[in-house]
Amino acid sequence: MVTTFGYVDQAALDSAVRRVERDFSSEVVHIRYSVENNHYGDPSISFRILVRDEAAPVKRLVELWRTITVALRNEARTYENGLQAYFTFRSISEQQELGDPDWD
Amino acid sequence: MSSYSQELLDSAVAACHSQPQTQATLRRAVSTSYYALFHFLIDEACTNWVRTEQRGRLARTFEHKRMSNASNRCAAKYTSSSAGSPEWHLNFVASAFHQLQEKRHAADYDRSGALTSADVVLLTQLVEDAFASWRIIQHEQIAHDYLFSLLFRER
Image 1 (cartoon, each protein chain N blue to C red):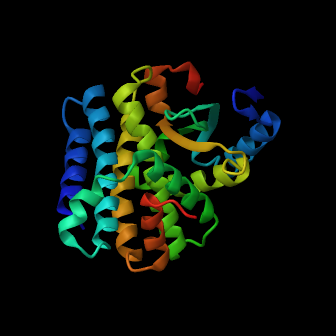
Image 2: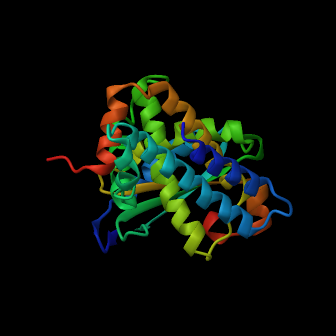
Image 3: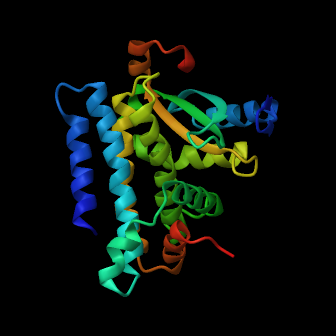
């Protein structure tokens, strides 16, 4: 993937994200991502993590946040790739209500 | 801990749970959560400054971007630390700050997407847990090195 800030290996990113999806499949439905610039204009990657409703209560979500954000940073080598990593979580029920295509 | 930071967090939690829940209350909750952690870290850093009468002026010199970059570096440095270690707690605080800052900007300025309750409740809880993690490591050298990095450039 060629971006305004250089080259990002999309196949490697896809593969990293799929590995994390598999490792967290009991709580996570899927993970989508986009490479873009953050509000400072710095290269970044935004992960959209769709979780099962059972994983959505806040205490469980915090525990998931602690582990999956580290896993995604490590697997996707975000810092080494010069990408600032951001994470957003949404439950299945919320997505069904919103129907946001970026999350499908 | 600064009572002002706790007041901000309490205000964010109240906004998050207010009825009816709207995009305005959710966005306010995100923004206020960020500022709770922002002022918390600045207060902790300024406490290291011996001359108390100068701390207010010192607090004004912190910059959002420098704090975000320092937090991102810190999070990357300690990303593989063992659960429960001081490094693990610091990684959590720094990661939470880095996330919150970008979320705060989006909440205040980007109305292209809807915020959801799950994500906003998560963000307020991250701040509460970051306060708790900080209390565990507040006397550790790595914690104070982090505070230093929020304000000063390494040479």
